[in-house]
Image (cartoon, rainbow, N blue to C red; front, side):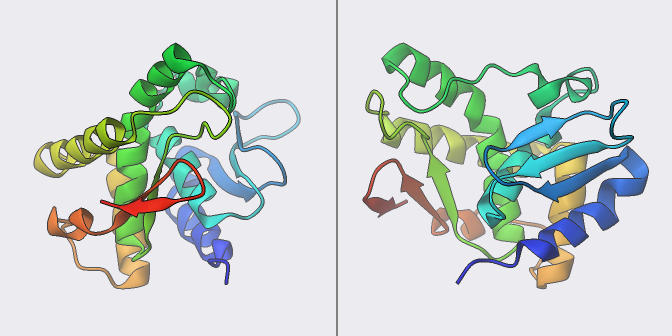
Length: 188
């Protein structure tokens, strides 16, 4: 049964709509960040197909994007779709460590499972073990040094809505994630 993405939209919009002029929007196909423009007077984080995990992932990118990047479509980030070669995949994994660590914290705060994703089913094989370890290390760093301000605000809002104890701690992460890189899923 799909997760109720409507709750996420409400939680996000209640937390950030007024203060950041940003709204979480259910989209159809590919996710997209669209800054305010002549056609829409607020920023939009558009997630794919009503997928709960897509919403959390796109919000995590918004949380690491600086002020200047939040004025650019898709934050001006480099992205190459599924089918990346080995070097492109390494670049993808380097830029995904922080967003996926934040997404993992969102998942824990919402009481949901998290899937570390190499997002390259039709490309070069990912170093799944190293990538997963790097994301986990980033989670530890955030737990020790603090999450970005917007990320912490969303963690707090999610935990409040889903009745998850705060502050988050490392034991909540060690058994929570799986790795999605092909048809098989392995546990951390």
